[in-house]
Structure formats: C-alpha cells, structure tokens
Image (cartoon, rainbow, N blue to C red):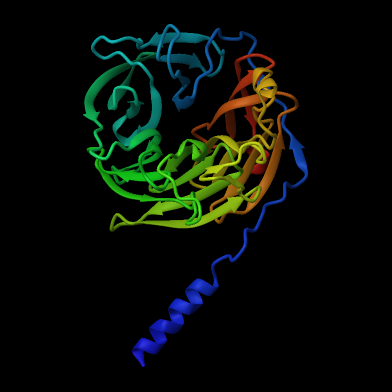
Length: 345
C-alpha cells in the first residue's frame, strides 16, 4: 500500500509540471521618469553596482583607469577611484562583481582570465570609503569548466554561470570554489552541448535565493539553496519559446532577453530588451533594454516599467528598496535614479 501511495504522489508531481511553455505577456507599460544628476560622471560602462551608505560603487569590467568608481549618491560626483588593471600584484585583467557579504562588510570580485576570486572589506573613514584585500581564492576545474558571472549566497556557497565545459549553464560552488552541482533548464535533452556561450545569463542573489536571467532569450528562473545544500527551482518564466540551431539557441530567431537583474526580500527587477540582435542595432545601442520588469517571489510579472528612450545597462536597488539606480548606455553613459516607492508598498 505504501508503494502505491508513493507511486501516486510521483505521478501527481509530474502531472503538475508544465507540458508546454507558458509564455508571459507584457502588461501595459508604466513610464518611469529618471532623476538625473546635474553633473554627469565621466565613466566607462560598469557591469556591476552596489550601494554602501551614501556611496554607489560602480564596478568596471576591464580597461579604463580604475576597477571601481565610487559615486556620491546625492551629487552624482565620482569621489574616489580604486584598483588597477595589469599583471602586477592585486591587479586585474577582468573584474566581475560577485556580490557581497554585508554582515562582514565585504564584497567579491572574480577575474575569469586569472581564475581568481578576491574578497575585499570596506570601511568608512569620515565620509571616505576604503577597501582592503582579505583573501584570494583560486578557481581550478580539472575538467576545464569555465565560469564567468556569479553571486555569493548566504550559505557561503556561490551560484555561477558556466560558459564552457559542462552540460548545464548554472553551477553551485562551495566557499573554496569547488563544484558541488550543475543544473538548469537549458540545453534540453534534445540539444545537449558542452558549450554554453549562447546560454549566457546574469545572476543575482538575496540570502539563499538567486535568479538566473538569460541574455539571449527572455528566460528568468528563481532558485533556492536549501539547508542541506541542495538546490530547488521555485519557478521559471519565459517571454518567448526557445528555438535552437543545432545545440545552440538560434539568435537570429529569438529576441534578446534580460541584461541585468537585481532583487531584495520582496521583489525581483530585470531589464528586458525584447528586440532582435543585429550588428547595426548593437552599434547604436538599440539592443539595450528600455523596459524594467518587476516580479514577486512567486514568479508573477507585476509591473512593466518603460524608461522613456533611455537604454539601460546595469540596475541595482537602494538599501531601502524605494529607488532603482540605473546605468544608461544611450543617449550617453550616465547614472540615473528612478523613484519606485509608489509600486513597492
């Protein structure tokens, strides 16, 4: 009898799974008016942002004159430049922001070329912020698995996007960057591959929940690491059905998806492109998002914000959750603020 009950539960579980993709429909757009700074900072396009008290850290990727621009969130002025690119001690070839451990006042930067994760502490001296290196963690995969974007979880593990050498695009790594698990809905069983470049996705985390937002397809999935270290998928949303060319996503037939994602304890925000890729569009920043989608933790699409011609790169939430900071890439690279307090009550 117990075996029969168990079998029925299994059948019920699988019968609840979606047999076909349920595609999201964009709701009526809400125009967001940017709060612009009077002084536009001269910056490169940062691929990461974090607010610390009255400062906004703008994390660059490579090149330029610094790794982090520190911006005053009231005036918009760049008040500090920190870090260098090169081959010397403590320098970077590429610097990807991997999140923070706020209780310890630390943040993480990963260099995929050097296969090295660095943890830094921050401290405030009067109104100036200072950074100190705590430790370096080398990443080495015996199977040649390459990783790129990632986020630290409250458990001390890391969720990361793997772009080569493994059959699913999402990894969980332990505190020493050893691979614990590998998963993701893509590629499916009909399109297996060890090359994950077309499945590139950005990640963001809040405590032990994290979101994977795919760039080449409108696909957003929310996961949670459980107390035993395992990971469950809470939900996944699709803006468009995936189309494959051999074992890769067909980028000619698919609209571009999510370019940045941020979250707090209540909501998830993701910038959405929704246009077809072309070289001309890329040169004119036409592929960059003009929409910010707002989800709750059950995967419901609550709001569709439109940014009035400003095309966005990175976004991040303020500490109180009432403001979205955004990097604009068109008509020029700058930082703006959006008051979202009426929508997050």
